[in-house]
Image (cartoon, rainbow, N blue to C red):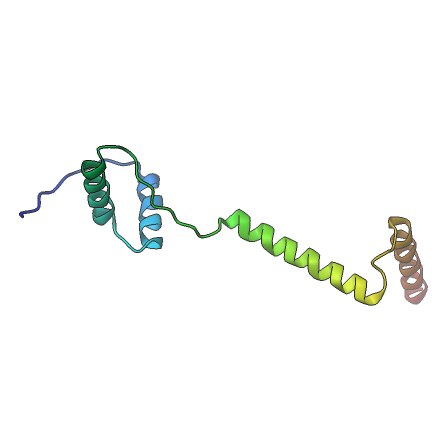
Length: 105
């Protein structure tokens, strides 16, 4: 079967994002359009789903933050300070500042 060219006009940013998506799922834009058209003709309905299941940047940042929190909690428990109140922490900070002030004088 002889191929024909089809021209599609897209917003430049949309095209860039779609290029990235296609690359992430291992196809190019031509393959994506052919998949779309063949699936549409076969099922006689729109749309079909092809998803990029990688976590979003926001999810990755949140997970790193949660990992850091868990590590800090584990260190606090190991060192015996996990049950400290905010008042206890503020008192330690004040003591530390006083010690530093005395050393600097």
